[in-house]
Structure formats: structure tokens, C-alpha cells
Image 1 (cartoon, helix red, strand yellow):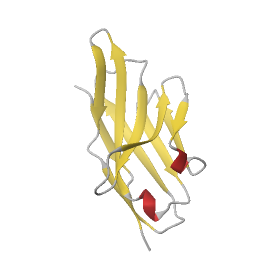
Image 2 (cartoon, rainbow, N blue to C red; image 1 turned 90 degrees about the horizontal axis):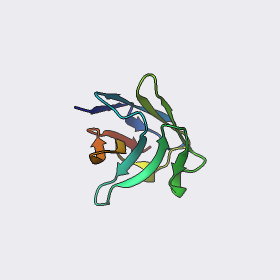
Image 3 (cartoon, rainbow, N blue to C red; image 1 turned 45 degrees about the vertical axis):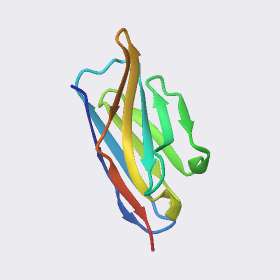
Length: 119
């Protein structure tokens, strides 16, 4: 069974920084995509950034230049470095892991970590 555990959320002032981490455990197909999604109150969950096992990245326009996604495949760990945080970045941030195998799409979520940007 695959599990994802996020950490690193918290309260930060506008302009501040945070680094989120997500540790994966279990049987994971080596070719996969990991990503960060977020969901603010009253809004749909949206993609923040994603990275393939080969290192290709994709960012939402709203975070380009401020957020950096990275991963350590040996440690099965995903990171999100966030700088110049804005109040509109406030949301629950979820870690996602997915791959397509012989049995079809496998899609896993973490429990989420709260990020609050406020003065």
C-alpha cells in the first residue's frame, strides 16, 4: 500500500518562505509523476507543480518564479520550496503520486498540510 506523508506547512507572513516535504512509502513504480496540489476554502483543488521521475517540471502560472518543485528519488521524497508567499497562496497543500501501469492509472494522495499566509 502506498502512503504519502506531507510536512512543513504553517503560518507565515506575506513575503515569507516555507518548504514542504512529502515522503512516499510502499511499492512504487519507478516511472511516475509527483506533484503538489492545493485547495483553498470554497475552491476546487488545483495543480501547483508537478515533476516526473525524469525531472521534467510543470508549474501553475500563479506560482512560476516563486515556487520550486524537486524530488529525491532515492529517498522517495518530494519537495516544494515556496518564496515570496502571498495571502492567495493560503490553502491546504496535497502531495500526489501517480503512474500508469499494466493495471491502469494509479493515483495516490497525502492527507494535506495547511499553509496560511497572513500578517
